[in-house]
Amino acid sequence: MKRSQQQAAAIAATAGALALLAAKRRGISLQKWLRVQAEIAQIIAQNATKDGNWRWSRLRELLFLASLERARRLEVAEADAKAPNDKDAVYRLHPLTHVRTQRQLSSTGTKDMMALRMEADAKPVVTDLVLVGGGHAHVHVLRMLGMCPMPGVRLTLITRDVETPYSGMLPGHVAGVYSRREAHIDLNKLARVARARLIAGEVTHIDSDAQLLHLKDGRPPLPYDVCSINVGIAPSKPAAYVTPVKPIATFAQKWDALLSRLDDDASFRLVVVGGGAGGVELILAMVARVSAELRRRGRSLTCLSATLVARSSELLQGHAVGVRRLLTEAVRRKGIRVLLSHEALETSTDNGEKVLTCR
Image (cartoon, rainbow, N blue to C red):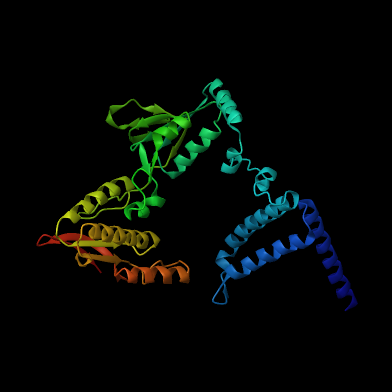
């Protein structure tokens, strides 16, 4: 018994010494270091079990994510110990080696930024970086390279639409909160800031062997060293009598055309397919906008009907219980009809009426 107690004491002393050494290396107190470890252990325990059963298949992934979170919290604690009340200290103490964060770039003065641009312009072009599409990722790349240009890199943006819609603001635009201009990003201005060539066109074929991009309308192929694709998504087989949300630019135009029909005295029926967060948010925005437009025209709201079709057995499946409850109640208050466990199959017409068939 004595021997086992001695072994336990030795292990505890070794663990304590290692913990103290790790805390000292970080420049934080042992108490703070132990608190972070306890928080991470609690996170692992909460997420590794479901209904009292361990989910062993996800444990490996969970431990990896927990290690990242542990490192982040320790870095924040170290920065707080060295520079209290300085939120940017963690970025200075632990700069990312592969990415310069927006905070790091925004802290660069105007003179320093201009010096970086002049230095980059003076270097010969050794790499052609071509961005195909004006999606969110490429918007961020253009903005970051505009603040911190890379010497020797020539930047080219190929996009079909010079103004790209920001999808996060789409429901607000549909509801009438944001104008079209507010919900779109001017890629022409952004390209000028990033010193990028802007080509308004579409890529029809990528020759990866020759590293050439073939463009629509018979334009000469464009060579590249590095090519990034961020063109968004669109339905592979557009259905009749359906307005797909993607691409957003097309949807916004059709939505404006639908609103113009409110001048008629006919009824206005909305059907949205999809019971996820996007579908719920979109139909709430649509009902809010159409209701406001009807009131402005002095028309009764009885001519408006809205239906939400969801294949799942509940709205916002996979989201927190509180979120599902609040949004389900919001949908109910707006008088939106909800069809759960209904899979949309096809659209057709019956005596001039558009019909959605479900099962």
